[in-house]
Length: 169
Image (cartoon, rainbow, N blue to C red; front, side, top):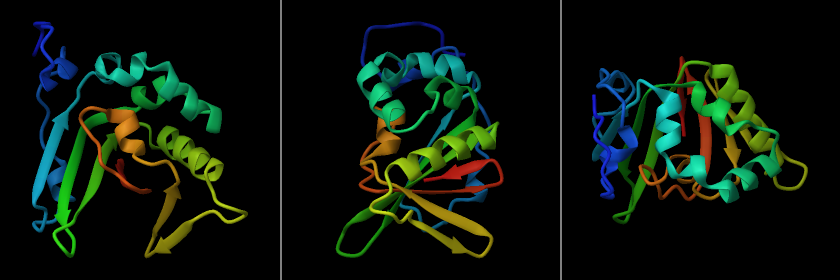
């Protein structure tokens, strides 16, 4: 368990009071991923308290003004893993996919569906079905970055679906 608090800007400071967890997201990650960064979280409430979002009322207010969501409840429903995968696109560009393990899937689905509806353009909600999965769009630039900064950033668009207890963004 990491317990020593320092004033350095180390990423380890966000994982104070956390213990290692198994890397179970590997079953979802293609071997075509260029880079995978996996974060283990076994105390979600403590993890949230250490993130800048917990103290950033401006970001919290901007999200809750769009939809009636409880950010703290969202993080309380967080599971044990967060993974960011980087894939190569054409012309030397990269695409990022984020996997978020959740304990209470309904909390995350409800919050993200509310954000999706709140940011829909015109009178149409972007949703697409593929097999038994439904993909939705949230029109908030870098939503994963807003939620998990500085661990995650660089998501131009946010689409999401859920697979078992894993949110895929």
